[in-house]
Image (cartoon, rainbow, N blue to C red; front, side, top):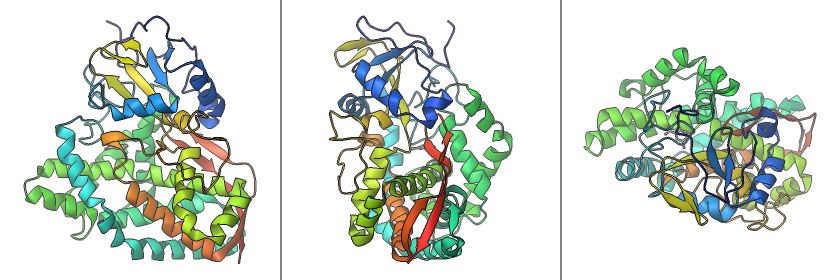
Length: 407
Ligand code: OVV
């Protein structure tokens, strides 16, 4: 049988609306809000013939699918490629791309390494680095957020927290883009980012080796669990690779998107400056409003249903997290960015057993950086049009010119 994007084409059940859209059109990836709205309007679940997939964008249904790991598998890949039929572009992740019981063991190791207790030990590193980087840019007047702040900060603190003895900002950022573009179709975005795979993958693999890591970082903690027999040493290397896959692009994007939201909404910046303890709900609102991971997929492991419609085994389902987080049936005035909204239940970190295991680290990074900025900067103002960087799974900025007005 001819596969479509590495999965079996399906015949959608009667009654499922059909939408002739390309969700990976670069114009949509740059400005997705109309696509989100239309997807939600069309129904609980929509069939997209171009890729022969179902897509969901309403909050309740998206959340339900993410919560149901028994029917909607991760082990067949979270992109369009069905791992039961075709090999992926790299050895599969042993936390993202597995189901229970395999998932349970690796998740436990990662959850321990990324626990709030361990994050506390990193607060000085996060704070000191934030001060250093903000000091470097504060008198510049106008900055370009992505190159001057969003990329430098995580690519400085994260390799240190992990214990990397040798780092490379470009490789880390490009590997993240490769990982996230790869869950999409075989389009120009995916092909372009995989062009450098031959150079980057061997570097990433080597960086995960025990002897390349310090003895006091998160990487060493993963290897210590291998010494105790919880996982094998090969598995430890793959979990360190998961840090590098999931920990860089996401936080770079979170920082850029946070500053985009706050610079577009000066009243919200002022509220946060007046009460920095609002940091936490503010960051959750950024994740709701500009969800860094806009789409992740699941595969129906057997015949099942979505909102009452039958779904065939092997069906790929695009879960459009960005759309769910803007669903007016869930959120009042979803198009308004309000730092005190407290959007409990947003799916910016996913949901269920695969919900982001690194979310405490992400929050700690953002908190340190934003706190230092709010202490030293009175106002931020747009200094030109933002440019988005299309990616098949990530909604990230390419350029954000910003004027900083120090206190
Ligand atoms: C959540 C996430 C995203 C991307 C990659 C991975 C995990 C991984 O485990 O490789």
